[in-house]
Amino acid sequence: MEVFELLQKIQKTNTKFIVVTGGVCSSIGKGVLVASLGVLLKKAGYSLSVIKWDPYLNVDPGTMSPLVHGEVFVTSDGAETDLDLGHYERHIGLSLTRDSSVSSGQIYQEVLEGERSGRFLGKCIQMVPHVVNVTKRRLLEFALDHNVEFVLLEIGGTVGDMEGEVFLETVRQLRMELGSEHVMHAHLSFVPFLSWTGEVKTKPTQHSITELKRAGLAPDCLFLRADRQVDDQSVSKLSVMCEVKEDYIFQVLTNDPVYRVFLDLDAQGVGRKVQEHFRLVPPKSSDLSDWQNFIASIDQSKQQVSIGLIAKYVGSNDPYISVVEAIRSAAYHLKHRANVVVIEAEALEKGSYGANDAAWAQLKSLDGIVVPGGFDRRGAEGKILAARWARENQVPYLGLCLGMQMMIVEAARALLKLPDANSAEFEPDTKNPVIWIMEEQKGVTRKGATMRLGSYPCSLVEGTKAYEAYKKPVVNERHRHRYEVNNTYRSSLEQAGMVFSGVYRDKDLVEIAELKDHPFMLGVQFHPEFQSSPLAVHPLFDAFMQAVTKRKVSFDR
Image (tube, rainbow, N blue to C red; front, top):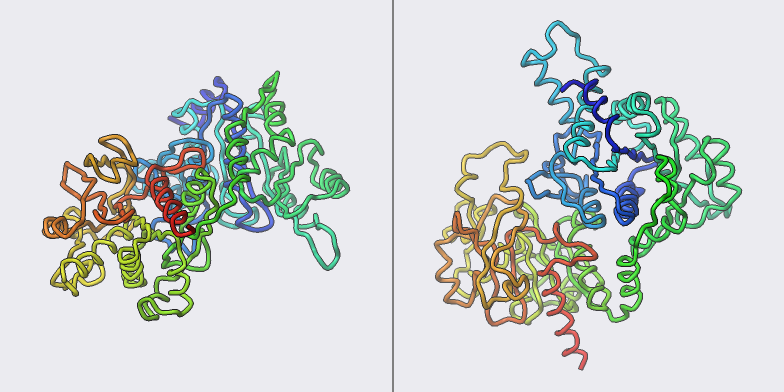
């Protein structure tokens, strides 16, 4: 369908678009702001969905290092997406699909494939109208397909980035074509505090708005990202210089936990003002009682547990943000606070097993161990050592994807007396490949979106820890991997005390493994963290944390 027809259809609907851009610098929390707006609107009774436009030229973030772009979040339909989709799902309570994640790479790929197939015969392909129209069409089709009252659109990057200019032009045209009754533009801008002058500085935000105006845009509301309250005089100055009404300027202050942002924005009347902009009268109030109760339980959480995250990527929590969120939420629900201790897996390799160097001293002090997913051999032996420590010392252990595979390798070496047991991913010529490549992955050479991705069913075995956690015979979980447990070794491992408590029956693939004579040593081939949320903790993270707190109590006695 052509863009003109789509615009006509949208104008006949009740769909409203809220566009969020960011200014001054990256990583200021646009995803959290979008999630917060989503929470306020959903809790006021509105239907909504979310879409993100990322300016990078990669088709998706699947081939990027997590240290470069953060965690790769996987949707149920198998899309590798930006970590902000995790914020949207966890906080708003949505289940998104691949159409919620759009990159410049996807847009340009579609335009070029269209040109090669003859779609633009006789035309010179240009940014305007061709690239903009493809971008616009994706958004309008998204809105019509989802048939919701609100579509929240986050534009990644920072205003002024060259790669994002086509997205700003798309928004400019949409605002002109649909009008303010259908489109609202919110801008999130960093407001720094200079300790040596003792004041906040509004000039960066003013410059950010100037960049927007150069693109033909003027925001309807302004969100000030700051570590401390922005004074009234500065707010008045921004109102004048940025041409935004004072009652449409809001503050997004640093909060711990981040969920307090929802309550802060509600107290500032954000939900009401959004509805007023779209002439939705009388405005509905947001029922945030479940979030208020959750935050109250956090405030009541006094006891601490130390959970080790045995990581390949060190320097930022973003590569494992869903795991960290799931760990902390699970602890909060049990009135505990989780101190997540990131331990570099390679540091464990460099030390001696059980020694008193820095990394091992940290490991030995932990109440629980989580080994997350990852790829290639760097740090793999350190993760195997962590699994060994957990097994030998009865420390609760949760292995996610690669974390389960390393648990299997350790068990094969120790329990089956196969010292050369390994994953074929790291040692292709190993004589005992207890982890090997999946049949359908053999011969795959392209890297982008070619793994086993998305949601698959897992059948659970009654009487196991996994079944006790889920309390149902079949569950659906999200995957991102190429290697699996080698079924040749399953019988031997079972005889040695390993229980394969979850299986993908269609291809007889191991999904969950657990150690029989251990308080809680369980690994999964999937990523349960992607379906855990603050208000609905994933059953496996809950079971793991229960084992952690139980052990903590017994040790404290």
